[in-house]
Image (spheres, rainbow, N blue to C red):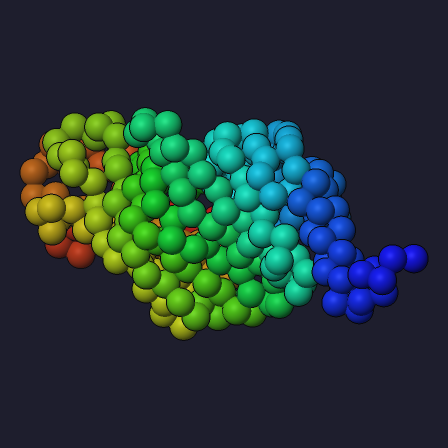
Length: 241
C-alpha cells in the first residue's frame, strides 16, 4: 500500500468525500419517503432528481399548493437529523416563488418565503384567492409559535358587489401565544381579516366588513356574512390545513 494512503487524514478525507458523494446522488424521492415528509404535511405528485437539486411537481405543504418548483434538500442538515427544504420557481412570472421549509427536533416552519400562492381552496368558503408573501417567516416549537415576521397581502376576488378590495388586505405576521396571527386590513380600514393558525394546522379566520350601504350589506349576507355590532358584517371560518 502506498505511503500516502497510510495517512489517517487522507483516509478520513476520502471517507468524507465518499459519504458526501453518496448523499449528493441520493434520489430525492427516496429521501422524502425515508424522512416521512408525507406525515409532516408535505406531498408532491412526483419528485425527480438527486437530493441536492431536484424537481417537485405539484408540491403541497399543509394543504397549500406551491405548484411545480425546484427543490434543494440540504444534505448537511440531514446528517444532524434536521430537514431543510429550499424551494424556488424563478421564471420572471407573477407566480415566482422562493423560500425554505424546515422540519426537525420538534420544530417546523417556513423561512423567508417570498412570492405568490393560491390559497383559496385551503380556506374556503373565505372569499380569498391568493396571497403575496414578502420575506415571510414562521416557526413553531412544539405547540408554540416562537417566531413570525414578514408582510402578507391577501387578495379578494370581485365576487361581492360594492366591496372594493383591489389592493387586497395587508398586514405583518406575528406570534400570539400558540398561534401565528395575520392581522390584515384593507386600504380604507373598513375591511379586516384576522387569521390564526396553530402548530397542528388548525385555523380560525374572521373577516369583518363595515357596510353602511344596504346594497353591500345584502350582498355580504348573500355571501354568508352574519350581522355583527352596528353596521359590521362578519364571516367566521374554521378548519385544518
